[in-house]
Amino acid sequence: MRIEVVLSPTLYDGRNIQLHHTTVAVDVLRATSAICAAFCAGADEIVPLDSLEPLPEYRERGYTLAAERNGEKISGALCGNSPTEYLSMDLRGQRLAYSTTNGTVSILRAASSERLYIGTFANISALSKMLALDKREDLVVLCSGWKGDPSIEDTLFAGALIEKMFQQGCDIHLINDAAIMAESLWREAKNDLYNYCLKATHVKRLQRLNYENDIRWALTLDTCQIVPQYINGKLVICASAD
Image: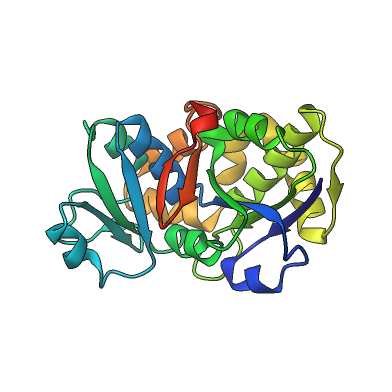
Protein backbone atom coordinates (compact mmCIF):
# COMPACT_ATOMS: atom_id res chain seq x y z
CA MET A 1 0.00 0.00 0.00
CA ARG A 2 1.42 3.37 -1.02
CA ILE A 3 0.38 6.24 1.23
CA GLU A 4 0.56 9.89 0.22
CA VAL A 5 -0.35 12.81 2.47
CA VAL A 6 -1.66 16.01 0.88
CA LEU A 7 -1.45 18.90 3.33
CA SER A 8 -4.05 21.16 1.67
CA PRO A 9 -6.85 20.75 -0.88
CA THR A 10 -5.02 23.30 -3.06
CA LEU A 11 -2.33 20.62 -3.56
CA TYR A 12 -4.65 17.70 -4.24
CA ASP A 13 -4.75 17.91 -8.03
CA GLY A 14 -0.94 17.71 -8.13
CA ARG A 15 -0.72 14.55 -6.01
CA ASN A 16 1.51 11.65 -7.07
CA ILE A 17 -1.17 8.96 -6.75
CA GLN A 18 -3.70 9.79 -9.45
CA LEU A 19 -5.44 6.52 -10.34
CA HIS A 20 -7.15 3.69 -8.47
CA HIS A 21 -6.84 5.01 -4.95
CA THR A 22 -8.83 5.60 -1.80
CA THR A 23 -8.92 9.07 -0.28
CA VAL A 24 -9.50 9.89 3.37
CA ALA A 25 -10.64 13.50 3.83
CA VAL A 26 -9.86 14.98 7.23
CA ASP A 27 -10.74 18.25 8.95
CA VAL A 28 -10.26 17.50 12.64
CA LEU A 29 -11.35 21.01 13.69
CA ARG A 30 -14.09 20.56 12.93
CA ALA A 31 -15.92 19.33 9.84
CA THR A 32 -15.04 15.64 9.77
CA SER A 33 -15.44 15.44 13.55
CA ALA A 34 -18.85 17.07 13.24
CA ILE A 35 -19.86 14.71 10.43
CA CYS A 36 -19.08 11.69 12.59
CA ALA A 37 -20.97 13.27 15.50
CA ALA A 38 -24.01 13.98 13.32
CA PHE A 39 -24.19 10.34 12.25
CA CYS A 40 -23.81 9.27 15.88
CA ALA A 41 -26.82 11.51 16.61
CA GLY A 42 -28.85 9.60 14.02
CA ALA A 43 -28.56 11.57 10.76
CA ASP A 44 -29.49 9.55 7.67
CA GLU A 45 -27.33 11.37 5.14
CA ILE A 46 -25.23 14.49 4.79
CA VAL A 47 -24.80 16.38 1.52
CA PRO A 48 -21.48 18.30 1.54
CA LEU A 49 -21.54 21.65 -0.23
CA ASP A 50 -18.60 23.92 -0.96
CA SER A 51 -20.70 27.09 -1.09
CA LEU A 52 -23.75 28.54 0.65
CA GLU A 53 -25.76 29.27 -2.49
CA PRO A 54 -27.52 25.87 -2.77
CA LEU A 55 -28.81 25.92 0.81
CA PRO A 56 -32.24 27.49 0.11
CA GLU A 57 -32.92 24.83 -2.54
CA TYR A 58 -32.05 22.07 -0.09
CA ARG A 59 -34.29 23.62 2.56
CA GLU A 60 -37.19 23.43 0.10
CA ARG A 61 -36.40 19.75 -0.44
CA GLY A 62 -36.71 19.06 3.29
CA TYR A 63 -33.07 19.06 4.29
CA THR A 64 -31.87 20.40 7.62
CA LEU A 65 -29.40 23.22 7.03
CA ALA A 66 -25.99 22.94 8.68
CA ALA A 67 -23.45 25.58 7.74
CA GLU A 68 -20.48 27.48 9.13
CA ARG A 69 -18.06 30.14 8.00
CA ASN A 70 -14.89 31.15 9.85
CA GLY A 71 -15.85 29.00 12.82
CA GLU A 72 -19.36 30.35 13.41
CA LYS A 73 -22.82 29.10 12.47
CA ILE A 74 -24.44 31.08 9.67
CA SER A 75 -27.82 32.74 10.02
CA GLY A 76 -30.70 30.45 9.11
CA ALA A 77 -28.88 27.18 9.78
CA LEU A 78 -30.10 24.85 12.51
CA CYS A 79 -26.59 23.49 13.06
CA GLY A 80 -23.11 24.82 12.55
CA ASN A 81 -19.89 22.87 12.75
CA SER A 82 -19.83 21.84 16.40
CA PRO A 83 -19.52 18.10 17.10
CA THR A 84 -20.66 18.53 20.69
CA GLU A 85 -23.75 20.40 19.49
CA TYR A 86 -24.61 17.52 17.17
CA LEU A 87 -24.11 14.99 19.95
CA SER A 88 -26.69 16.86 22.06
CA MET A 89 -29.32 16.65 19.31
CA ASP A 90 -31.72 13.99 18.07
CA LEU A 91 -31.12 13.85 14.31
CA ARG A 92 -32.79 10.50 13.65
CA GLY A 93 -34.21 10.41 10.14
CA GLN A 94 -32.84 13.80 9.16
CA ARG A 95 -30.91 14.70 6.03
CA LEU A 96 -28.38 17.50 6.36
CA ALA A 97 -27.20 19.98 3.74
CA TYR A 98 -23.78 20.86 5.08
CA SER A 99 -21.28 23.56 4.14
CA THR A 100 -18.12 24.59 5.98
CA THR A 101 -15.12 26.84 5.46
CA ASN A 102 -12.59 24.09 4.77
CA GLY A 103 -13.81 20.52 5.27
CA THR A 104 -16.55 20.28 2.67
CA VAL A 105 -14.22 21.89 0.13
CA SER A 106 -11.76 19.02 0.66
CA ILE A 107 -14.44 16.37 0.43
CA LEU A 108 -15.70 17.64 -2.90
CA ARG A 109 -12.17 18.12 -4.24
CA ALA A 110 -11.65 14.38 -3.78
CA ALA A 111 -15.07 13.30 -5.06
CA SER A 112 -13.61 11.43 -8.05
CA SER A 113 -11.63 8.99 -5.87
CA GLU A 114 -12.33 5.27 -6.21
CA ARG A 115 -13.46 5.41 -2.59
CA LEU A 116 -13.76 8.46 -0.36
CA TYR A 117 -14.02 8.17 3.41
CA ILE A 118 -14.26 10.66 6.25
CA GLY A 119 -11.59 10.48 8.92
CA THR A 120 -10.89 12.11 12.26
CA PHE A 121 -9.43 11.06 15.59
CA ALA A 122 -12.90 10.04 16.78
CA ASN A 123 -13.16 7.18 14.26
CA ILE A 124 -9.50 6.45 13.52
CA SER A 125 -9.48 2.81 14.70
CA ALA A 126 -12.68 1.90 12.86
CA LEU A 127 -11.37 3.64 9.76
CA SER A 128 -7.96 1.96 9.81
CA LYS A 129 -9.52 -1.49 10.24
CA MET A 130 -11.73 -0.90 7.22
CA LEU A 131 -8.88 0.44 5.07
CA ALA A 132 -6.80 -2.60 5.94
CA LEU A 133 -9.39 -4.92 4.36
CA ASP A 134 -7.87 -4.12 0.95
CA LYS A 135 -4.15 -3.80 1.55
CA ARG A 136 -3.44 -3.31 -2.15
CA GLU A 137 -5.41 -0.08 -2.48
CA ASP A 138 -3.24 3.05 -2.55
CA LEU A 139 -4.24 5.68 0.00
CA VAL A 140 -4.25 9.47 -0.16
CA VAL A 141 -4.86 11.35 3.10
CA LEU A 142 -6.23 14.78 2.22
CA CYS A 143 -5.85 17.35 4.99
CA SER A 144 -8.22 20.31 4.90
CA GLY A 145 -5.99 22.78 6.71
CA TRP A 146 -7.22 26.36 6.91
CA LYS A 147 -7.99 28.33 3.75
CA GLY A 148 -5.20 26.70 1.76
CA ASP A 149 -2.60 26.50 4.54
CA PRO A 150 -1.63 23.25 6.27
CA SER A 151 -2.75 22.68 9.85
CA ILE A 152 -1.04 20.91 12.72
CA GLU A 153 -4.06 18.88 13.80
CA ASP A 154 -4.87 17.47 10.35
CA THR A 155 -1.20 16.62 9.75
CA LEU A 156 -1.11 14.83 13.09
CA PHE A 157 -4.15 12.80 12.13
CA ALA A 158 -2.40 11.71 8.94
CA GLY A 159 0.58 10.54 10.99
CA ALA A 160 -1.68 8.73 13.44
CA LEU A 161 -3.48 6.96 10.59
CA ILE A 162 -0.15 5.85 9.12
CA GLU A 163 0.76 4.34 12.50
CA LYS A 164 -2.62 2.59 12.68
CA MET A 165 -2.11 1.10 9.23
CA PHE A 166 1.27 -0.28 10.32
CA GLN A 167 -0.44 -1.78 13.36
CA GLN A 168 -3.02 -3.39 11.08
CA GLY A 169 -0.18 -5.29 9.43
CA CYS A 170 -0.27 -3.43 6.12
CA ASP A 171 2.85 -3.34 3.96
CA ILE A 172 3.14 0.45 3.75
CA HIS A 173 5.32 2.68 1.61
CA LEU A 174 5.29 6.41 2.38
CA ILE A 175 5.81 8.07 -0.99
CA ASN A 176 6.14 11.77 -0.20
CA ASP A 177 7.79 13.98 2.38
CA ALA A 178 4.44 15.15 3.74
CA ALA A 179 3.69 11.56 4.80
CA ILE A 180 7.11 11.21 6.41
CA MET A 181 6.69 14.54 8.21
CA ALA A 182 3.20 13.59 9.41
CA GLU A 183 4.45 10.32 10.86
CA SER A 184 7.35 12.08 12.62
CA LEU A 185 5.08 14.82 13.99
CA TRP A 186 2.67 12.21 15.35
CA ARG A 187 5.47 10.39 17.18
CA GLU A 188 6.36 13.70 18.85
CA ALA A 189 2.77 14.60 19.80
CA LYS A 190 0.97 11.31 20.48
CA ASN A 191 1.60 11.09 24.22
CA ASP A 192 -0.07 14.46 24.88
CA LEU A 193 -2.09 15.34 21.81
CA TYR A 194 -4.23 18.07 23.35
CA ASN A 195 -1.36 20.06 24.85
CA TYR A 196 0.72 19.64 21.71
CA CYS A 197 -2.10 21.13 19.65
CA LEU A 198 -2.42 24.20 21.85
CA LYS A 199 0.17 25.85 19.59
CA ALA A 200 -2.05 25.32 16.52
CA THR A 201 -3.53 28.50 15.07
CA HIS A 202 -6.97 26.96 14.54
CA VAL A 203 -7.06 25.73 18.14
CA LYS A 204 -6.40 29.30 19.27
CA ARG A 205 -9.06 30.58 16.88
CA LEU A 206 -11.69 28.19 18.24
CA GLN A 207 -10.72 28.96 21.83
CA ARG A 208 -11.40 32.63 21.16
CA LEU A 209 -14.86 31.57 19.95
CA ASN A 210 -15.43 29.51 23.15
CA TYR A 211 -15.35 26.08 21.49
CA GLU A 212 -13.09 24.40 24.05
CA ASN A 213 -15.42 21.39 24.38
CA ASP A 214 -15.26 20.82 20.62
CA ILE A 215 -11.47 20.95 20.65
CA ARG A 216 -11.19 18.38 23.41
CA TRP A 217 -13.73 16.03 21.81
CA ALA A 218 -12.14 16.30 18.37
CA LEU A 219 -8.70 15.48 19.79
CA THR A 220 -9.93 12.35 21.60
CA LEU A 221 -9.38 9.03 19.86
CA ASP A 222 -12.00 6.36 19.24
CA THR A 223 -15.20 7.89 20.56
CA CYS A 224 -17.04 6.86 17.37
CA GLN A 225 -17.21 3.58 15.44
CA ILE A 226 -18.86 5.10 12.37
CA VAL A 227 -17.02 5.53 9.06
CA PRO A 228 -18.82 7.91 6.69
CA GLN A 229 -18.38 7.35 2.96
CA TYR A 230 -19.08 9.70 0.06
CA ILE A 231 -21.32 7.98 -2.49
CA ASN A 232 -23.32 9.60 -5.29
CA GLY A 233 -23.08 13.12 -3.94
CA LYS A 234 -23.81 12.42 -0.30
CA LEU A 235 -22.22 11.03 2.85
CA VAL A 236 -23.68 7.89 4.35
CA ILE A 237 -22.49 5.38 6.95
CA CYS A 238 -20.26 2.82 5.25
CA ALA A 239 -22.01 -0.54 5.44
CA SER A 240 -18.80 -2.45 6.18
CA ALA A 241 -18.29 -0.26 9.26
CA ASP A 242 -21.67 -1.08 10.81
